[in-house]
Amino acid sequence: MQAISTGLTGEKQRAAWQSDALLAAAAAVLSLVANWLQGANKLVQSGGDSDSLMRLVQVRDLLAGQGWFDLVQRRLGLDGGVEMHWSRLVDAPIAGLIAVMRPITGSDAAAEMAVAYIWPGLLLAICLFLIVRMARQVGGDAAAFPAAVLALAALHFMAIFAPGSFDHHNLQLALLLGVVAALMSGSGFGAGALAGALASVSLAVGMETAPVVAASGAAAALVYLLRGATERDIAAGFGVGFAALALLVTVVTLQPGMWASVRCDAWSAAQASLAVLAGLGLAACVRVPAFGESLPRRLAALAGLGGAIVLLAAIAFPVCLADPYATLDPMLKRLWLDWVSEAQGVLSLLSQRPGEAAGYLATPLLALSVIVWCAVREPGFRRSAFILAPVLIAAIAVSVWQVRGAIFAVPLAVVPLAMLVARARKAAAEGHGIAPALLMALAWLVSFNIVWNMGVTRVTALFAPVQVDTAASGDACYTAADFNQLGELAPVNVLAVSNLGASILLNSDHRVFAGPYHRNVEGNLAVLRALTAESETARSMLAELEVGIVAHCPGNDETLALAAAFPRSLLAEMRGGSAPEWLQPMSAPDGSPLVLFRFHP
Image 1: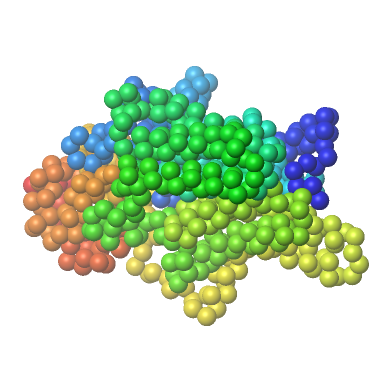
Image 2: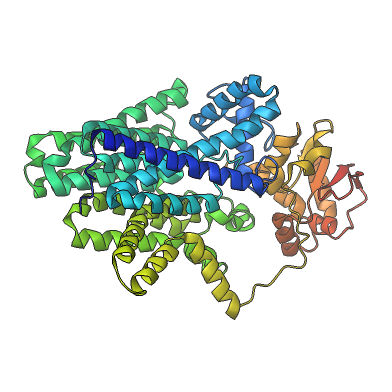
């Protein structure tokens, strides 16, 4: 088996590219149509995806003239606003698409709605194309179709490509798949440089990719370490591309006065200096002839580089090596972070939602076992294994810490699993009897993460039936129409739980104090203290904050949890229908789940 070359050249290779592109485009359109038929659009019904809504708020501010380097969200938090940790590298293409669509559609709202489909649809097509290309590379032509089917199912049900998904995770996935695909595509300097450049951009988009980006750099170093001179160019290219884009990203996203600043949660001097050292150091290790004469020398050189990177991080940026949430206020950790689903570890989900945990872990672990099995038995697969395995292991490790790592682990798992299915299909076609057909069916089933999710959920429900919370109203106020009344009112300071913050900002001109963002410490604390205090204490807090309106959603998960934890609080009183007299109920449209109170100090 040839893991790198499928034997296609010239016209046949172009035909394969075209076929993969058409397959990816068709699958992406199918996903968007399915979402449209189901009414899935986060601008209409966010489903609690505050980040996509807040991203659009940030894009609107940019289009309205807010400075490129100015990331302060002035309508969030206490006086002065909150500086967001998000990158303009995500805002720019979304803003560009909206600007292009505005004259075509005739209004800002229509342009945003069009881009709500175009942006995630484009990224979905790119991700599908890259997965199919990699699967064809490791498994031959027969792996292309299984890859498209498995990838479509995995990405569709992850919901990060649903219409209105402006959060940066879908872009990060596309960039990381591009990194792996470029490394797998060949041994040339250009492929390595492209991989390194994409890795730097991915890191600049969001720091949560740091472990996976580091693993991709380790993969480039690993193929050079084990294969020697034949991989010199791609490793050098990765290093140069990684360092060059790190410098470019610094210039493009940070104003000159901030080039020396250190921020652990966003691109800064810390990430830039480590990236330049890692990139140029890798290029030097592979280009200095004395370092590459033997495997022990290559190992010594790369180990020295790794030590230098760790030493620089430990000496210059020790705070960035700690738990990013270690210094978070205990109240915020207990009443906010511990309830954020994507911040939970996969293992912690096992006792609460085992089906969800299985959906995150089963296919990546199965894919890793396929990689190891094939690498041991088939020398031609080993180069691909040296690239896929480190990145997949890093993604799995991140998932164990926080489930957001599954965004990278599950799609990457499709590549080896598509090869597994392709081989099972071939065996079924060539074999006799029912056994090969059953094995093929089994290969298909175990390769769908949604099957693991649903299967484990059904099985565990037999032994521990799910308890339905009858106290929940069932309406969490995540529909844009829920905020129509609020949007018609003159701008004031609005007090609401953090889950509603982004929706209020997007659908009105009001200011909110709370939003699910770790930099908004004081604003989030102010809201938590006010809502969980007894009414008379809360009254003075609201007066100090100059609150105009209290927006209350009885069915929101955050409301339910806080009211249950603080049964004598202002929030519990409102949810129980006995709000204090200084909160005047405002008339609301029939059926509106959002209850508004005018505050009278």
